[in-house]
Length: 330
Image 1: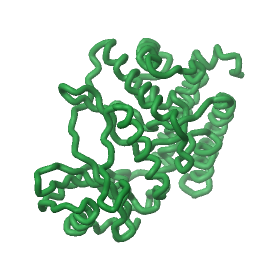
Image 2: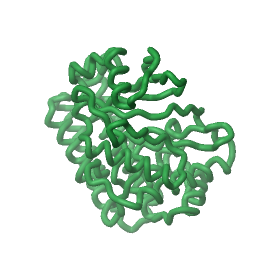
Image 3: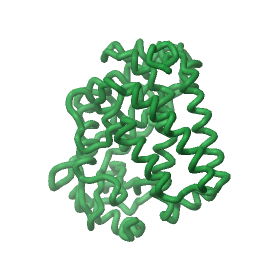
């Protein structure tokens, strides 16, 4: 963790954004919840509310951040409701303040969407379909590729090679993840990857009264399978959410064709997300905030719980009706 990042004082925040936006600010610097980045609400002297996001050093290169901003801009150009970064005085949307990259956004509020009827699921599907329509226009060569070879296998290797668990737990972890990866590699064959949101759960979709739905937080955008942005919206496992899946896809296919074979990836992707989160945590163990948020991380009790969850998810994969009926399942 950069000392400069940890010591982003209100004065330094205001200096950075005043220079970057070439405008005066009031003294408001209200921190907003964000573990990875540092995010603050600011206010211009004209009364405009702004959100400044200072990106954690070392997490993303400028080119990767630019691809995130490009994706959001592509969505905005397609009249998809997103919060696009503002142009800075020097040109572009990414500023650099003493080696810390940052961006500034207009503040837009909303409330989490309430799903009360079939129409709500159709609206979600339509929104994701529009995002993917914009995402299909170009690739993102500097972002992660969501595939077991490029993400999951290296994440498993990191966890096993880092000495984060006892020998007994490492054995169980290796066994269950090897079985998951074997299935994942087979099922990912021939799957088309494109720009997707990557973290499209319902907390990242807000309802703005009188305006409709708005998508936020493209931080985790990747090149990945379209179904990743669908399964995160589901209230339960794939076998128990057939109605919701059908409604989402009905809305989705108003804008984008969907390859139904990707539905076989739902439970696999759920397992990959568990592994991804464990791997991400292992890179944060030296951060002073991490231990306060995850006090038992790395203990035997912790790994017993996490490996049991992976074993449970492996059985969910084995019991996924779409996989069992695919003809590929052994």
